[in-house]
Amino acid sequence: MPPAFPACGSIHQRLLSIRIRNDLTSEWDSRGVQKGIEYAILTDEISIAWSGMNTQQYKNLKGLKKENLRDNMTDLELVLNMLAEATSFSSLIVNMIEDAGNKDETPE
Image (cartoon, rainbow, N blue to C red; front, side):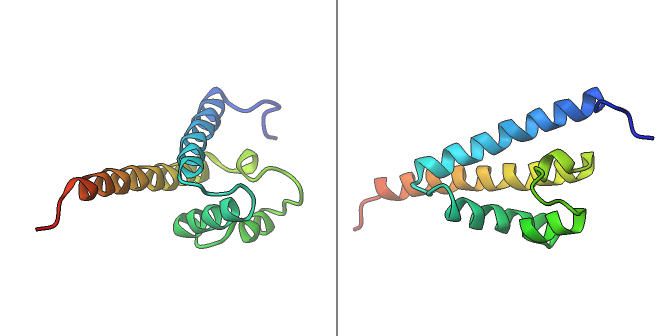
């Protein structure tokens, strides 16, 4: 029988996943990504990258209707999702730095 409360490590991982997601969505906001359908499209792309399924397919696999997918992920699923989101965030930052560097270059 599973414990009534999640293990301390699971709570830490869930809080870390929230922080990583917030970092990513803050960057999306700063780039003009609109909440709703655009967030959903990007979230699906991240989900497909690590799981091979979009968010709805993954919820269906887990038998979830209205429940929060992240709240129903195993530790491994959370870690893989966090890695995918952190990688996406890092890629956005690298692109932003490269874009800034390209603007400083003057054509000859």
